[in-house]
Amino acid sequence: MLSLPALPVAVYAAAKGNLPAAGILPAIGCLGLSLGAFGTANDTALHAARSAAALGALPAAAARELTHETTVRPARLLAVHSSPKAAFFILLAAMSLMGFTGRQILRALAE
Image (cartoon, rainbow, N blue to C red):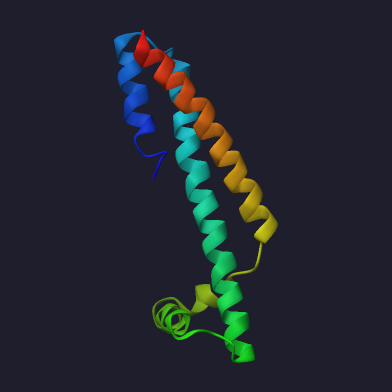
């Protein structure tokens, strides 16, 4: 959610002439990495829920979510795999790029 306003604000700053046009590219990267971080974390959580359900250790709220996923997207649920390290490092990359981009945009807007 934090990366969502970065692109229109970067476009605005570039249109004002305070940010080079290439400054828009990191804002696009923020959106992509944010989606990647969410997707990887979601797949990891679904895999963990599926594994916990197989052991009979799934809380009721998570069981309802897993049932919903099984009903709506059964093939996708079977294809998910656990990638906790990837989820963590993609999140760190997204946060780093958002920090860099945010600093550049704020600096451009202050001019």
